[in-house]
Length: 374
Image (cartoon, rainbow, N blue to C red; front, side, top):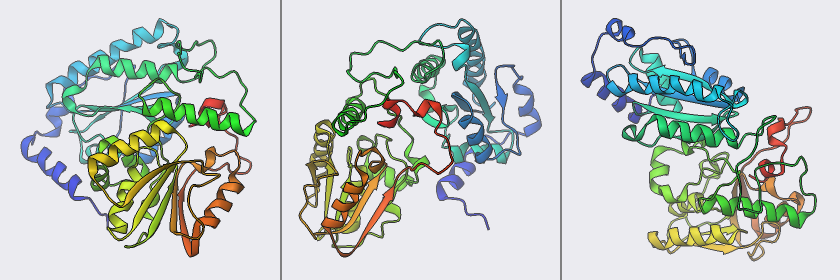
């Protein structure tokens, strides 16, 4: 039996009550421009994600004929093709011309559900992908414009290394223009990672890609509870969901960032428990402590430190969690030795991370030093 969330049910009911227009009238509202591809009824979320993962840059747009702006928005997106044909440096070019997929949500229930599953809950709304990873997305339907889409497409294209392309000027010592080499010294690796994440938390031009939390396994309730200021979209999962956190426990988060997992864990351990976030980037610790001061939680603290040398006493922790951070360490065995040191007997770990699979090649765009630092 298929389970549909309450959020989805309410959205579908609202659409049907307010916009009960026969489909055969709606289908005539849009034409089929060559630059755009319209999603089919028989496509599912896996096929869409598979397609965008094969394209350097992709744009997925949700529209409906009952929203007058949809027609002009699609016309504006169609005109962007001329800009890509101009081949401007550090902007659109043939090498970075996006795959454009349009989901007409009012043509069938299947297309409407497809948009919702992708996180496109408003009409119009959009997501921009780089090699299958979300680079940007609309927040409100009222804010969706061709200019905003153009700007985010250019940013995604500039961040993607392509033959003959140039990179935007950078005032940072960490450039997004890879020179084909990666640091091998442990101190240099840590410095690169630290700089990349400092750029991200400070809103500066950086190389790390932010991902919508829904795609990482966070529920809407968790996203709202944690707060927008804690979500930098830098994880690759949701370890809180499977760490089996209990009341009264002490939890340590390796690479705590702005605090999203720490604040979610704080509710689970309760007032009698404690949560310790560890991060080696001073800018992240500052941001997390700012977020903590706004919440007034007494059972959460953030400490500056490296995960290879945790500022935590021996045998004091019930559970250690980490979200896409251990892969960044130049000495992973030392990280696990530290985890073992601080855990109590019978302690647990909950880790979301990425690994290299044997006999699987790493895509060329992920081999740069900057990509490996994110």
